[in-house]
Image (cartoon, rainbow, N blue to C red; front, side):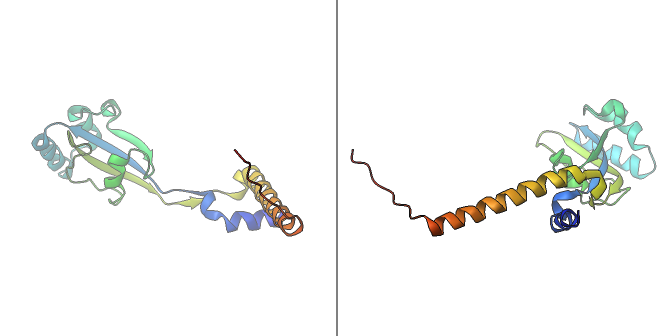
Length: 156
């Protein structure tokens, strides 16, 4: 098991959950209207209520909640959301060149390694694959030293 734990730590980046953010979004086709909505939010209006009232995004009925996202999920919103601090509302931006949006970050989970005990079976499987690949490479190298291979061209 020590070898397994060593393997886990040597490949910790492969066993790390990426940073996630809890993101809410309001999308509207009218930039000016959205700017006014943003000002109201900054003065204390509830983001979710504003999303229900003014958003045209499919998350409208959930108060604009996209949920916990990584940088790769909803990249058009993530690229802005991952520049914000917790509790911040973005400036108005265009996620697609056609509509306008603002995002709100309400929670940040830093990247963190998955607990070894939780993924032990996965680590075992990947460690076994690693050992097998290593052994096959060794055998291949040994064969190259022992066996002379001659490639013959076939006359056509």
